[in-house]
Image: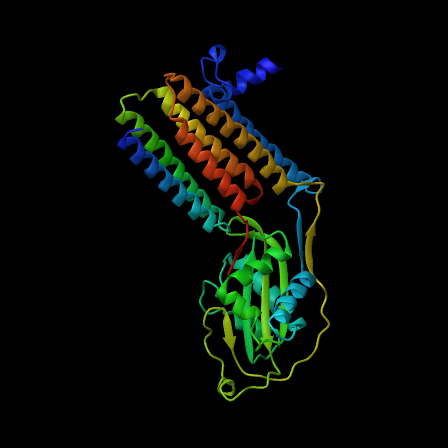
Length: 295
Length: 85
């Protein structure tokens, strides 16, 4: 075993002064192994998502609590869940999946975010929309929105009193994802001198909307969430396996680089530094990569 | 390490940093990520080949090595994102 490991990782005369792990034949086997593993994981995930799948924990309540937490930290009143805004958010999410777009405005140009709000019966004075997709938990969503100036503006707007969420899983632009739509609104806002001018609907800038206020009919809100708890978390599993393989290969390249520099051995191989640079940057990419995006 | 080596490693570092940064920026768009990573890896192989060719030590075995290391990274990326495909 010791000899096998030495041959695999340390250059010496028995492996032609190149770690066996770095031989083209071994690299080829590694590539095939990873492809087979991808196929295996994909098959298990499709057939047995309860065993192997992405672990999600996105709940309306968590997003609301965290949103209100940041509002209170900034001296603002908490938002209240509104069933009509919830409905508007759900219809918006369905529209995005059906028409396959990731934007505030549908590709036809005529389907605007406030159309969904109006159709839900919520007569808004002010309205706004935040979108998120590809996140696996509520905290990351709220944090991503808070990091983006326009989304942060919606989260911390004193104009908004109500909020509604849709958390929907589906295939968007060829990618399986969980889409979160957050609709903000205000109906009973007491306008200040400047804000009282905005009585007519105006075209929104970014994701903020302006409009006219009317009375509202209260509808009870059903809590929503998207939670999946497979026995093995696919994201964690693939990440761990990939990092182990990459660190082993990186380690072998580094040892080989030090060895050849020290012994001044000439061989017909690629430059170790090239491969070391690539693997290091790719490992950093894996470590910093967050799956989600906001709009 | 001569000037050519330095220039080459700087060019490679820039290529890899720009390519993977762009892929990280488009983290929510798998197709964009695939496009950026594929382009970066092709650039990596081409730069590697040019580097060896410049130093008159290019062999088919070396080209295969660059190809395999690039494929290793590509397969790891696809493995990591298998649930999104």
